[in-house]
Image (cartoon, rainbow, N blue to C red; front, side):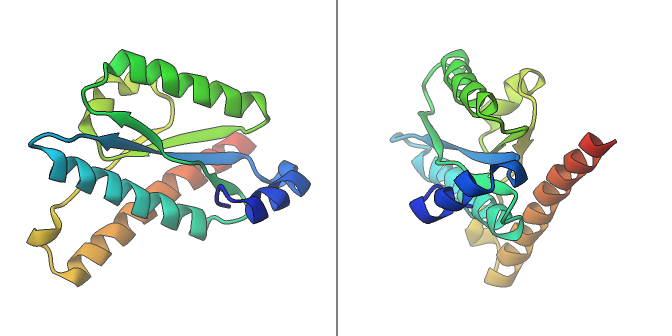
Length: 154
C-alpha cells in the first residue's frame, strides 16, 4: 500500500492485516557530491517501491524521510525515532528503514531494522545489469522482511 487515499482507505478497513511499514531514508545535498546523493535516494526509492508492490496487502510504503546530508546525524536520528514511535503507537509491528546513505551505518547498532544497500553507479552498468542489481536488492530486502515475519510467529 502506498501513502495515498485509496490505499489508506483499504488500510483503515483491514488494519489487522497490515503490520509493516517501509520508510525510505532520502538524503538531499546541493554541493559537489549532489549527483551521488541523488543516486542514493533514487535507488532507495526504486527498491522501496518494488518492495511495496511485491508485498502488497501487508506493507505500507511510508512517505520518504528526507534530510539534508549536512544535518547532524543525531538530530536526524531523533526525528526518525519520533516518526517510528508514532507508527508503532498506532499498531504497526515492523518498521523498516531502507537507505543507500552510508551515514546511517555509523549508528546502525541503535537502529533496529535498518536496511542499507550500496548503489552501483548506473553509467558503469548496462541497463540489464542495472535491472538485475535492482532485482537482487529487492530480493535481499524482501527476504529480511519475510524472515522477521516468520520469526515473529515462533
